[in-house]
Image 1: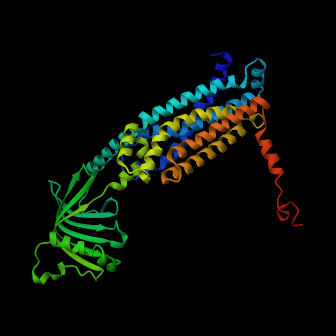
Image 2: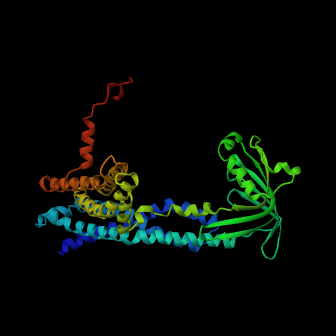
Amino acid sequence: MKRLHRYIFGEILTYFLLCLFLLTFVLLLNRMFQLTDLVVGKGVPLGMVIRLLLTLMPVLLLAALPAAALIACILAFSRLSSDNESIAMTATGMSLYSQLVPAGLLGLIAAASSAALMTFGLPWSQQATETITSEIFQTRAAALEIREQVFNDAFDGIVLYVRRIDRDRKMRGILISDSREPENTQVIFAEEGYLVNDSVSRRLILHLTQGTLHKFDSDPAKKNAGAGGNASQALARKAPPAPPAQASAVPDLDNPYQILRFSSYDINMDLTQTLQETRAFRTGLRAQPIAELRRQLGELEPGSVKHNAVLVELHKKFATPLVCLILAFLGAPLGVQNRRSGRHGGFALSLAVLLMYYLLSTFSDGMGESGVLPPAVAVWGPNAILAGLALWAARRVVRRGAMDLFGLADRALERIRLPRWLQPGAAA
């Protein structure tokens, strides 16, 4: 690599590392509320949250790499152009195409990093998130403390009162208020009960014996048409044979207030509200290896929405790394053409290009999944548009030299004639 190439590459690399750090930090701020709520609101240990934060890094870096490559090249070549260093290099016989070599090298590094993250980083992130989620469930279930003669609200939507807890952790004199379904609140009284930790299904079950369930249904007619029959059958299975004097054990489905007697009753003391906080850190299809995506394609019906979604993700395994290289090549000529506006204008230009790309990519991905466009066209279309724009910009600079893009935009806006009633002084 020539000395001038090393100089340009060092300039681009400095901006690239700075942009990558700042963009990753900004993307991380979007998740900080969820991470903080896990520690403060859900009682998850800080160490687990930090580990969960580390599992986010492949996802965040994958999103930041293309943007960092584009912004770095635009800012670096904007500075070189505004300081006339690019012109001086051209005077020494170094063409613009030769000046693009460092930008291409950075694009290759970003593309290789993106491919590694797609192949290894995302599957690791998904697996690590699942492992930490299981540990969070085990930690919360083990650390859960139910105190005697205190209204315990450690469960989401459930308030639990226990008169006495034996040494074997069996609870006696239990009162439960269950408001997880606001339209179907219920109060439960039971003589005894104990917690069962089902780590396989990640459920915490409260097993109750000998009690009554008081339920108020705000829409009994709806229950009568739907779940009413199931409630009667469940009662018949669980409730012991009632003497004639206890006819109230059979619920009147037309009465919104019902009393059900049971000898055994299980309540799912669901901790999924905490576990759902970690679902935002999962990556779904994006984390599936290429072999797994191909296996799913063979099992799904061609043309279905799920088949198209898997096919879109399979193409993005290759299109996402390539876009880093394309954006790096696009940023260099755009930076040279943006010589007058400097770094601030270069940053604004970067945002405009990124906004255009992400909007186009999101729109085309949706069309590919719905079947409006073939998945291959939907994924590779935005890349082809960016590649064409990069080629046009490079040829434009080589043939005509630098151009003030913002000045061109101002002149274009001046040619647009506003209606007379919108022109200045029209009100007078």
